[in-house]
Length: 390
Image 1 (cartoon, helix red, strand yellow):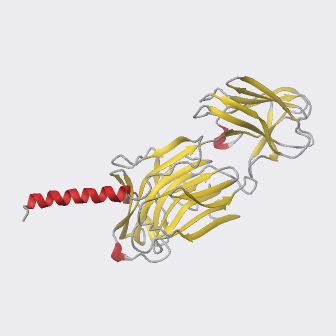
Image 2 (tube, helix red, strand yellow):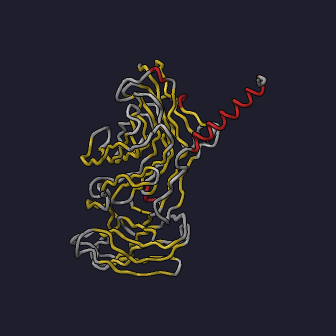
Image 3 (cartoon, helix red, strand yellow):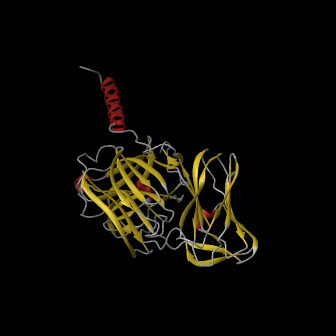
């Protein structure tokens, strides 16, 4: 018969082994579905507390629960959301979550997560504007649900895209699928979102599960925060399974392509010389304003300068705003690693859309650029330029 210290040591070893086994069970990661991506935002949850430089807490009161910062903790390489049966803010249950302070758009997002055991909780990994205080924020335009899982059905997953006019008023575009994944979501699994200009693709454990078409002509593609949350929703939680927790192992975002616009967050590298005015003509995404130079005069330029995280080969496009009095011979100069390439674009003929300016090598950083110069005939117009990694 073993001594008590020996039994305690053996129990500790078994417990540590169980934790390690639980943490490593299932895919450790999947990573982007193709090459050319660069890690641009991440949290491995390796610290001992939430990194509040990166995260806001979810603090709204919704459905059956109030969300509390005190329910979110970081320890042992995990972020845990405590799910409790307690009275707070008029509710009988509390949940919580984190919402990134940084706003992001196109790229590949990935997390590794496992839901709790016991009915009554709605856990999700999703993208939408907001600071966590309200899911009905006036800012919201795009919502992308990487996963929505109701714990009453621990093998069911929903992926989707929704559009909003803000304050929970729908904008009319909705795509989604709900299915039985055939796996136990109470175990660790990897979930990915690949958001591109024309579609959103969803992955589970590195396997493509659903693709939603989502064009910028359908609705505004805004910059969104990352939400990692769990709330009491759908059915009253099973109190015999509480307290419990929903957990995330990491969150990562990789960027591949770069868009520089004349407005909003994407205008970080946009500048003008001469006289430019705001046009009533919209640009490449719904509600995107465009600019035009004083007509029939020279000396006006607009420049787009991306901040490329990685050197590489990029195909460069400028968005042409076609109109009867646009510049018929606007000059575009692309500054790249090998020099400067010049193209001319007729803004009168054809329809509005992306025009390729060629494929070039660029160094990392802000050395590369695209500049449009008014020819002196008609009105030069400026909206956006994109650098697509190839």
